[in-house]
Each structure stands twice: as structure tokens, then as C-alpha cells.
Image (cartoon, rainbow, N blue to C red; front, top):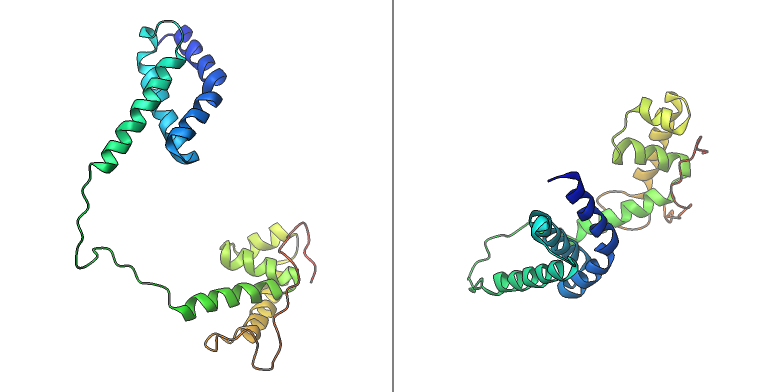
Length: 187
């Protein structure tokens, strides 16, 4: 298409997309579905833009409405049949694994900020010792020692198979605040 037509279409989208998105949201019921619906309508309008005469908004609104009706028809047109065995059966998390994850999260929050930051960067973000040291503004040896201390404390706080929120010595898990690695972390 020529630049004049592209410019007209771009101006229309900038000017009216907010209003059209509100209409699409009312039709679709969710933000994501509304954005998809509007994107489809604008794509269809763009193809026919040279032939649209006068005000383009009613044309795009009509596309929105018709597309939403078509979506609803497609969904309702698929028959559902009860089956004896479900085809997709995933492995559910055992209650113990969920408890262990929550306990590990609490234990991580109980670590001092530097240890928490080092463990988060090393194991959750999968950074190397060197990358972690650069990010925290400290030496690689500091990262290594903080990693060792943090892992040792986690092992004390979470005796992995017990699944209890206390350690074997009776030490309760205490939070020390959120991870905020800014500049050099303090231990």
C-alpha cells in the first residue's frame, strides 16, 4: 500500500484503538481476548482500507462483532462427549513436594540478604560465580563463600525429607526481608 494509505490507517488506529479496545473488551470478556479480537479486526480492515469509504470506525466495529459471534459459534459447534478415561493425565504434585517447595521458599527468605542474593543469582538465575560477582560488585571468592554458607544454612533450615518448618535443633525459620541486590550486598 502507499504511504498515504498507511498514514491514514496508522492515524485511525492511534486515534480510535482505545475506544475500539473497550468495545472489544465488552464483547470478549477479557483483556487478552479483546486484544486478539481487535488485532484481527484491524488486520482485516487494513487489507480493505483503500475500499472503505467515509468513517472507518463503524466498519471496524462490525468486524469486531462478527468475529466475536464467529468465535462463539466455533466454540459452541464443537460437541463434547464424555469418556471413561481422560486422555491427558499429568502427574500431580504430591502434597509433600508442594510443602517442601513452600518450606524452601520460606527458608530462602530467612537467609541474610547477601546469601539470599547469591543463591538466587547462582541457582535460580543460573549465573556463574564470575557473573554473580560482577552483578553484586564483589569478588568471586565472596560469592563462593556466601554460596557455601547459604547452602549450609538452607540444609539446617530444611532437612529435605522431614518436611517440618523447624530444623532438627528446633531453630525456627525467620524472615529477614526481601531480596534486594543493589550494588554491593552486605552479609
